[in-house]
Image (cartoon, rainbow, N blue to C red; front, side):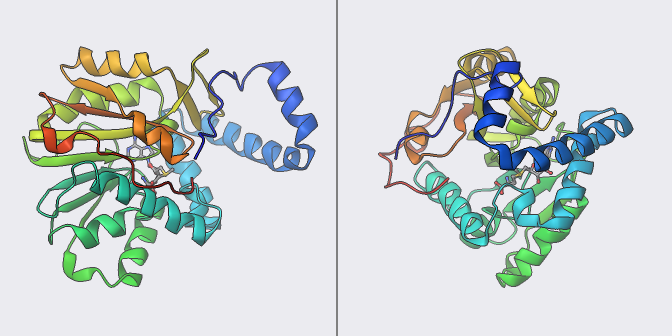
Length: 275
Ligand SMILES: C[S@@+](CC[C@H](N)C(=O)[O-])C[C@H]1O[C@@H](n2cnc3c(N)ncnc32)[C@H](O)[C@@H]1O
């Protein structure tokens, strides 16, 4: 499937906004409502995590699936399957311990929980509302006996977690909503919790042009910005080319604290999936 990414546009440019408004007039009222709400929340909550938590509270009230980015249940199921299939063919094993940063309402998390041995899934999120929805997903899927850990967090220091513990750390569609200082905090600390041979996969919204953000909700980065940030914190970083073949709108980087073992090297992509 061809990628749907637009890698050069600057969404903050006036010309882009005017063109977009002309070609999508029906979206203008909803965008203005969202922009107004976000402006108020940004005024009320000055630090990014508190602001984004408030955005998630508002979005989750309407629909937890839409709050994590899936407009329909079908899309929610497909995107969870895509994340699961990719990780399973790129190193995840049932005995692994997994940390899923920004687990949302377990769109992919329930599949990881089902696959992993009991107690080996740790999901964290900054949003209490979405974690309540996550528990609902867990119950709906009948996965109580897997005893996953679901934890509310305020930062990405992982200070409550042990050294060298996780084989797999995962953050899907989290850095796409994060300013650079939040990403840096994560990269500064993730090496400590990675087990020997472990890796950290994250997605991000990629641009080849000017880095920018929209409403402090969606952030666009150049690959080199994130790989050099990882290097600065002593991590190896690799762009996952074959993730691009899935057709998902974001890109993916894998980082590790040491050379990646052969078992975690990307296999040939297994078909494609919806974004
Ligand atoms: C687009 S949703 C994706 C959820 C899940 N990873 C998935 O793919 O279904 C982003 C999630 O990340 C959470 N989040 C955003 N910033 C975070 C941060 N700094 N630390 C932990 N979670 C965060 C949000 O609350 C939200 O649940």
